[in-house]
Amino acid sequence: GESVGLHLPTLSVQEGDNSIINCAYSNSASDYFIWYKQESGKGPQFIIDIRSNMDKRQGQRVTVLLNKTVKHLSLQIAATQPGDSAVYFCADLDTGRRALTFGSGTRLQVQP
Amino acid sequence: DSGVTQTPKHLITATGQRVTLRCSPRSGDLSVYWYQQSLDQGLQFLIQYYNGEERAKGNILERFSAQQFPDLHSELNLSSLELGDSALYFCASSVSSARPSTDTQYFGPGTRLTVL
Image (cartoon, rainbow over all chains, first blue to last red; front, side, top):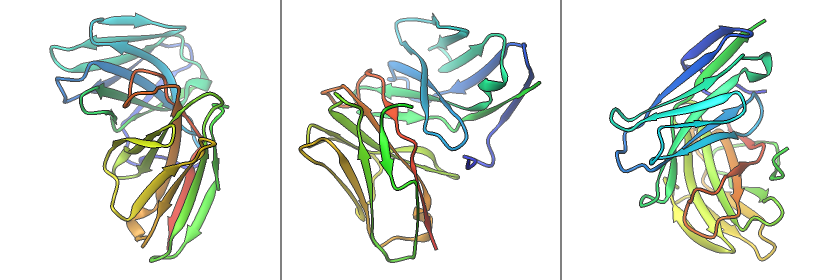
């Protein structure tokens, strides 16, 4: 598959460790946030979302934290597995602006 | 498999040419979105259609156009191609009837366009 973003920041973790991927957004009017996972050669895949009236949301092995004060979003992956290796994008939606804005992405590499 | 299909998977063409990318949304989804993913620009929203009508426009060049047909498949037309148009082009679909909403967008596998 093709690589997306040769200059992406990379997070390398050991299998079984927890991973934390961070994202900063700039639009203070954004009210909905999403994390996507993109594996090599595939399209982005929805992982988890959070609305601006929440500061934490949990899914299966994933947790998203939102800090609106500093416009920061994080994705925590528990017990990281080799299948989690991918590029992770955050996206924010300002419903007034009518479109998702994607961050530049972070490459997660899981070492066995 | 997201249920969104895109053809072709790869496309190689020359500068100045015109190409058409095709997308079939998931069954039941009425909205189709087009995105461009390049190395230096990341994932950029281009345009959204809902049930045949344009709903939202992003950073889409005038050389690019799209449409959604009655059977809900969509085509993205890229003309007067330049080297800088080389990128991955993704289609996504959602149930949403509104401008980009909080309905989950399901992405297709993409079309890789190379302009030589």
